[in-house]
Length: 404
Picture (cartoon, rainbow, N blue to C red):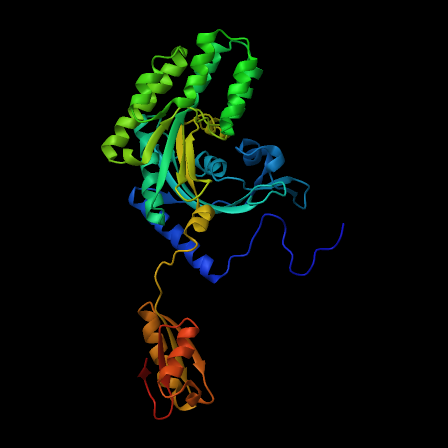
C-alpha cells in the first residue's frame, strides 16, 4: 500500500473552512434553539462506544461500522448514529428519571462507505428523541418539531412524507403468507424507491390478479388524509388497519399544529433502519435529491439496554442542509479592524476590549507605517473591506479613533 501524499485525506471526510463552519454552526444553533423552546434538553455522548453494547444495537449494518481496538483488545466503534447511545444513557444515567424524556443533540457520526461519489464517512446530525410516550400525539410532535427545526435552520421549501412500517408488514404478510423472502424483496424495492423493480417482482410472483393489482396500487397511495380512507379498503388484516388508524390520528394532530401543508402520507415508506416499529418519515428539500431529515418510532430498542420503553425521534441531516444553503449568506457580521502605532496602542486595545464586550468581532494590528492605509480615502476603504472588515479604526499619532 502506497503512503498517502502530504495533503490527502481518507475517502468520505472533508475539511470545513471558516465560511462553511460559520454557516454550519448557525444551522446547529438555530435548530437547537428551536428544539429547546419545545422542551428538549441537549445531551452529549462519547464519540467512541463499546461494540458489544451500542455497536450491536445500532441501526447501522455491521459492515458500515468503524471498529477499533483499545489497548486491552476490546472492540470499540465510532458512533454511527445518536439514537443507540441515547438509549444507553436513558437506561443508565437517567434510569431514575421519569418518562417522558425529551432530549436533543448535535454530533458528528461515522459510517464506513464504499468509494462512492457524494457519500460521506463523517457527517453531522442535529436531532431529538422523545422517550416513554407511545401515543400518536408523540409521533405528531416530533414531525411538527422537525418541520419547525427545518424552518429555523433556513430550509424554506420542503415536504415531509410519513408512512407506517405496520401497514406494509400487514399488507404483504396477508398477501404473501409464509413467503418471507419474497416479502423482503418487495420491501427492498420500496426502500430503494425502485418502483419499476417492484412491479417486475410482482409479475414474477404467482398471485391472483386482484391481489397483484392491490399490491401494485399502493404505489399510488400518496397524498393527504384521503389516503387513509383508501388504505382502509385494502385487505391488509388487523396489523395494516391499526397502522392506518394510527396514521389518521397523527394527521389529525398535525392538522391541529397547522403544518399539514408540509406533509403527505406515503404508504410506500418503509424506513431505512430495521429497528423502526411504527410511523416513519423523511423530509426532502425542493432543491436537493437527498433527505434533509428522517425519523420514526422505535419501540424495541431500549429493551436491549434493560429499560423497555416506547420512543420516537428524528435527525436533521445538518451537513446536507449546509450543502443546500451553501450559496446563501446569513448577512455580514460586523467585523472591525483596529490599527495602531506605538503611541496609540493603549487607546486602541482599550477600544478593542470595549467593542468585544458588545459582541463585535475585532482584529487588532500594529502598523509600523499607519500612512500605508491612506488618509481615510478610497484606497484605505478598498484595502480593509477587501479583507472582509466592515469598519476601520485607526489609532496613530495625530489620527486617534478615526472611523471608517
